[in-house]
Every structure is written in C-alpha cells, then in structure tokens.
Image 1: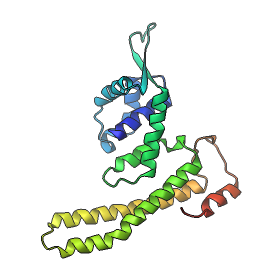
Image 2 (image 1 turned 120 degrees about the horizontal axis):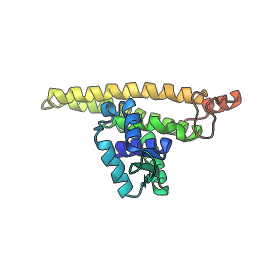
Image 3 (image 1 turned 90 degrees about the vertical axis):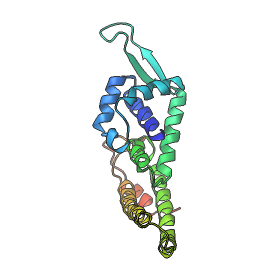
Image 4 (image 1 turned 135 degrees about the vertical axis):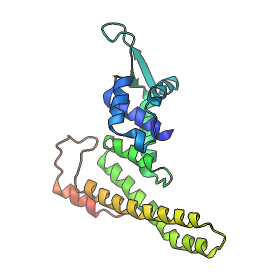
Length: 206
C-alpha cells in the first residue's frame, strides 16, 4: 500500500489539480501495473481513499464541459505524507519490495541533491552490511542437511540481487555526485560548478 500511496500522491503533486482519468493515464505510461503491481482500475479507488483520509482535496467542477468531474490536489497533510513516504523508501533498503525504491526514484528529483546523495550512501552501507553476513548465513544453510533445495536457491538469488543493487547504487551515486540530473532548487538545465562536483565526490562515506 505504501508504494501505491506514494505513486498516487506524487502524480497528483505533479499535475494538480488533475482528474482521475488524467492521473490514471499518466501512471499507466510508467507501467506501474507491471512493477508496482497496481491494478489500473484501483487507481480511482486509491484517490478516493486518500481524499477520505485527508491527504487529497476533491474539487468538483460545476461549470463547462467538465461539470461534475472531480479533480484532486494535495492537502498540507498530503504534502507531509508524500515526503515522509519518499524519504522512507529512498533511505531504507527493502529487498522484499524493490518496487519501493523504483517509486522513490520516480520522485527523487523533488529532494535536494545533498539529501539524495546521503540517502544513496546510507543504502550502500545497508547493502554492504547484508552482504558481509551472507557467507556465514549461506554456510549455515548448506550445513543444515534438512534445508530444502529451493530455500538454498532463494538465498542465492537474494544474494545476487544484493550484488546487482550495490553496483547500481554506487554507479547512480557517482552520477548524482558528478552533477547528472536536476533536483529540488536546481533548474532543468543546471550546470554545476566543478568545485561542487569535487566536494560531493570526495566527501567521506557516513
């Protein structure tokens, strides 16, 4: 539910005020039905639920061709919830829910570059800690003769995913540190000062 909530709040935040059909159409271009396991028909229900809980404001148009149609915009609580979820998913590695990081990537640009770099450094530390424990855990699993074969392979595929994510996170961290992309407070055509790039690249890992 957290991934769906972030995606709905984030997409409303981009287009607000926006109609449910517009938001649904945009999310489907992101293929959320594939990687976030969102049923396209549930998007309208999700929007109404967020409005019921006070995170979205429903605005019903009274005049013109769109009379009777409901559009949505974030409330103050919705804005707070959006950033809370975004930071939670960006800073925390959850190997069982890779969709959370993919959702966070969709909106990481709404945070400042320094915070995104710090979050990526934190993710690297978390993944490295998990990987350092893997040889010991694998040895325990293999030494236990009663361990089913599929459990052994599940452990190995999880370890392979950690290795892949660690490599990607390091490379993405370097791209952000080198000035790629634009983040909060920066224009889309932002060209960073080389001194700032060196500062980000050379700062010590937490």
